[in-house]
Length: 270
Image 1 (spheres, one colour):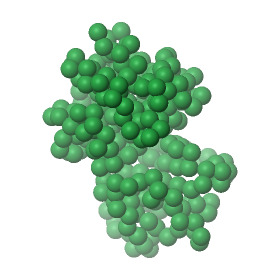
Image 2: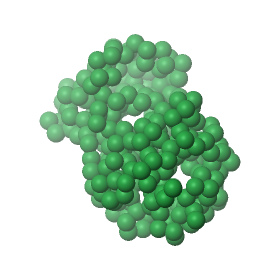
Image 3: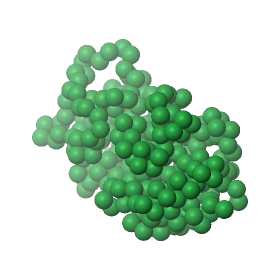
Image 4: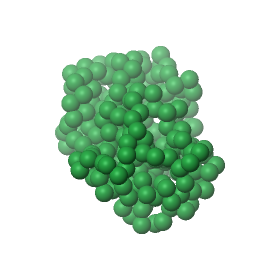
């Protein structure tokens, strides 16, 4: 097994329960880089919301790359330059907003720099400000959207119990049109149909000329499933949801027991 790239999810994977990168994980990433292995952080977040993590892991050098918005955006971490981007069109954003109103759930649109707040259902402000601290929030009028309105991701963020019940009510036609993924217990993400973290690995393969078979992917949540399945070596955290564990070839330790470092040291470092 020759692993040339390690793709690592953030929450529940690289980050511990205190949302920090342990010394052990930083050291393993450093050693992998020194050995010539590409280390790529793969997240649903925008780049701005993970810069402190990239810096902590020394992943902002020339040639370092990140997969953001669940694989919908590929960027050089040093400059922020976009290498590949897939976005929602205006009519798709309106469609997903209308669904949120039918379900009685708050909805947010997110682009590279801003979280937009269309009108929420009465008494149900989005919980997303509790999750997203890196981007500013800006109200937006749904009757006056610009014709060019490229959106990277759309989220419904609400109390887990009610959100889970409402998800069951979403008509199948929406699952056919878009990718729907829960990335946190209280967060449902909508992405263009052609986006998932597995397809993100395929984009990396083209950009970096590294076979997907020579990649390791480490994750814990449903939105990591596609990359754990697609990579030549799929790794699930001990704290991963069952569907990810079932898909993985390797189960590593938990995120609080430096599971990323354990996997890199055991299967990547010579």
